[in-house]
Amino acid sequence: MTKILHIYPSSNAMIARYVDMVEKGMPESVTSASAVDEKDARQKCKEWKPDIVHLHGLQQPDLLQAANYAMKQGARLVVNPHGDLQPWVMGSSVKQGLAQRSMRSTIEHAYALIAQSKMEAENLRQLEWNDRIETVTNPLITRTTSITQLTTMTATIYNKVMASDVLALMDDNTRRALSLLIKAGITG
Image 1 (cartoon, rainbow, N blue to C red):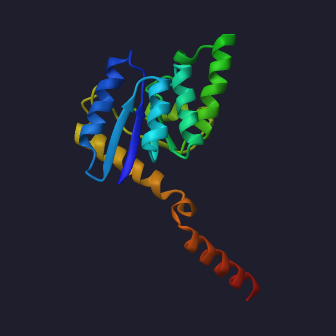
Image 2 (cartoon, rainbow, N blue to C red):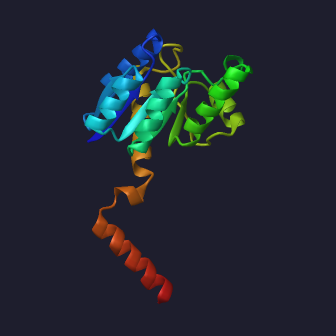
């Protein structure tokens, strides 16, 4: 059973609808919860211990801090910027510079970025903050996809994220055996 914690701003109704669609369409092997502020996210990380934290949007520093806290607790991070890293959104003020450094640090540690369009994916590639970019179009803003496609593609990304760190999935005996096999291979 994979546990997903969605962190998103309570003030954004479109993101809230998007998260609701994703949660409702997940297979039975996935359980999910949501948090809309840093305090709630930290509490859920401590008590529920999610496998993956899915951060939606990047404009609220407290939510970035919650995502970073979750990573320190062992959760893997998936980030869906929801357009927040588009050049016309980011700006260039000093305050924005500090925010961009915080966003960049979070993005660099993400296991996957989910772009909602080919244009957003290309802009994310140009930033060069993380090359693990997946494109999953949002059925709320385009008719070229469906809710089923959204949830299927998102579940596939979650599966990739969970399978991406094989060493972390091994128990102590398996790690010891792997170590011995490597030593035997090296020494002949």
